Structure formats: structure tokens, C-alpha cells
Length: 168
Image (cartoon, rainbow, N blue to C red; front, side, top):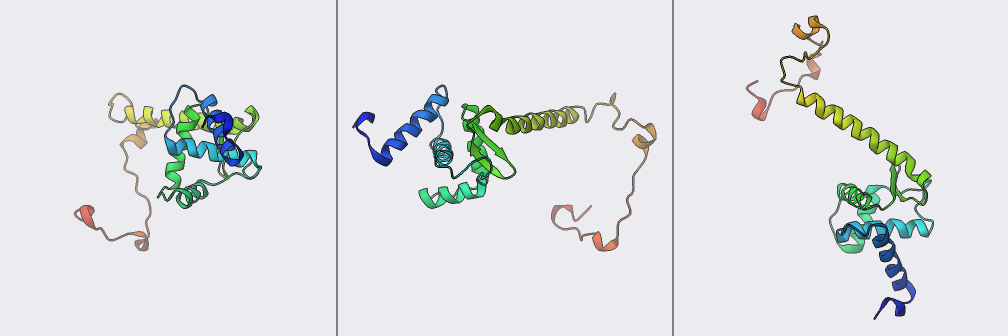
């Protein structure tokens, strides 16, 4: 049966699939990532998941597990989010959850947050690259560089060593 003869709920699925493919024509999404994107788009179209009422990753995972008998977690949801974003699907997020963005303004916070994370990750990588270079001091103050820092520790805070660290 061709798409022109599909009616009712199946027509919505065909339309959703076409929209995801139109947004991301150059990238083949995993089945799970495509289902995730379609779910967010449908929930947005129905008014259930919006910028003021986003959906948490754990809730998305719970719905997937219930509907498809899977064993996914919110970690999978984060992977799918990255996959569909790279394929140009407008998935916005905040600490409150995820939603399908309808305007560039709805994506602005997400884009700013991602760029901020990139800067922090690049700074951490650059620091690690310099870790063992002798010509780069660890601290700017030479007194700190050569001194040993001891912090006051209460005996109740000390834990008994175990496992591989027991000889330390």
C-alpha cells in the first residue's frame, strides 16, 4: 500500500517519518533514534511536551521500555539526542527535560549550553595535554609548585583502605 492510501493513525506515522527524513535527509538514523525523534515531535504536536512542560530522559526511557519491551536508560536517550541533533532534528533540552523545538528561539538556550560545554571540555583536554610538560608549571606561584598541601581531616572522615588500594 502506498503512502497516499494510508489513513488514520498510520497516516500520522507516515507524516512523522517524512518530517524526520526531511529534516535529516543526509543521515540514516538508528531505529531507536528515529522513534525517539518521532515521539518528541508527536508529543509536541499534541501539546503534551513543550518548552514549559518538557519530558525527562528517564520518562522517555520508561515509555520506550513499556512500548517496545526494551531495557533502555536515560543514557540511551542522551545518545539518541546527540544522534538526531547531528542529523538536524531540533531537539531542545534543559535540566527540566527534552522537547521538539518549533523556533530558533526555543533552541537558543540548548545551543548556548552545548557551546559552553564544548569550551569546558576543550579546556580540560588542553590542560591534560600539558600535564607532564616540564616547561609548563603546574601552579603560577612557585611556592605552591614546590610545597606539599596538607588539609585537616577528621579521623571519622577517613575510610579503611580496601581492595587494590589497601597497600597504600
